[in-house]
Amino acid sequence: MRVNESLDVIVRPWARRLPGGDWDVLFYQAQIRYQPLDRLRIDAGILSSTLGMATLEMRQDLNPAVASPFYYFGPVPRFDPQADRLQVLSGGYPLGAIVSSSGSWWDARGGVVDGTPARYRNVIASDNPSPAAQLVAGAGVTPRPGFRLGVGVAHGAYRDQDDTDYYNSSYPLPDADATVFTVEGEFAVRYTRITGEWVRDRFESTTTPAITRGFYLQGVQTLTPRLFAVSRVTHASTPVLIGTERVERTRSQFELSGGFRLTQDWILKGGYEASRRYGATDWGHAATLSVVWGKRWF
Image (cartoon, rainbow, N blue to C red; front, top):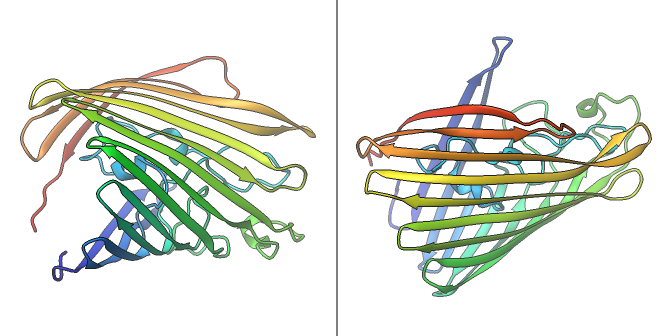
């Protein structure tokens, strides 16, 4: 809702019914956006993620494919004796404040959030780890219309020795920090749009630091005003603790889909998806289908 020319309020609740019958409720966004000047913006609250290209397409009316890159929601296997429920990058949104600015060919942002971008965090849940301040910064350049390159980084603690309840541990665990670094790009010309990102996480651990990586590359082709096609490849690698040693494991996903705009409000999407989980040798295959209705009233 636009309060005035400088102030917007954005609220996006989300709920799902779990297999056991309970409901999981969260806010993907609950933020205030204040723009006192043309080139200055302040966001505070439960923010849309400050890192990651795909977070801009989490809404199905914005996502050209059916699925999202898996590493935004799927956890990485544990690399320490204690499982930390980490991800390459989280699709959940943190609590914090960000200041952004931009010019004709550049953009920059910086601020503080309450949890590492490499772990899902439901701000209103009671079983979260302790809040941990993360410094977040990012910048990008747009050398020509339709072409942008950007980087982002976040650093802070992801494990607190006092979080014994969260880890269901009877003894304190060592404090540990995480550094998340991203590179992103977008190129659009005529009826073709290509986007992608690369993510590198460095997690301190009880032994040597663990390094996880992930990337996705996506292409969208508009065929007619109503018809479009999309292809996306996603890949991640991470160390996995097997016995007392770490072994590198990978996971991959490929999606080929198409969409048809029935009206301005309705979109029908469907296609093919292949995936291979961490440590697996065989690929799984699936057909995908999505019916989307989205409408803006004010």
